[in-house]
Amino acid sequence: MASNRIGRINEEIQRELAAQIRSLKDPRVSGAGMLSVTRVSTTPDLRYAQVYVSALDKTQEKEAVKGLKSAAGFLRRELGAALRLRYTPELQFTADDSIEHGAHILELLRDVERKSGGQEDV
Image (cartoon, rainbow, N blue to C red; front, side, top):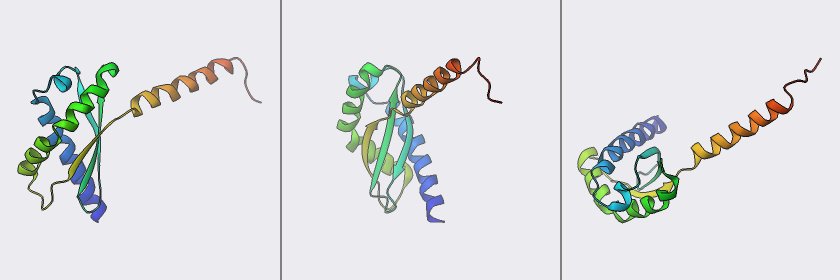
């Protein structure tokens, strides 16, 4: 039952942070182009939240994460006002490479399919 609550809180944090990131004026964040919060993982005691972000422009993703880390206090305060939890989690931002990793695996599978495309097992 508690994990369901954590899941709902994670979704709400993700939704709220996505809206707040759009309003940040830091040029490292706003200059990164399309920046999205891919997922949020909160500890069971709601003290820490790992926030995974992905940028459309991968060259500026590291700078965007640095900008988000510097704005973490502001984002935490705004998040606390919006969610009204007993503890507002401390935000830790990480660049998410799961999309890139998935694309790499898909490419490997396509290579295997091309190599064995003419051969059928009997």
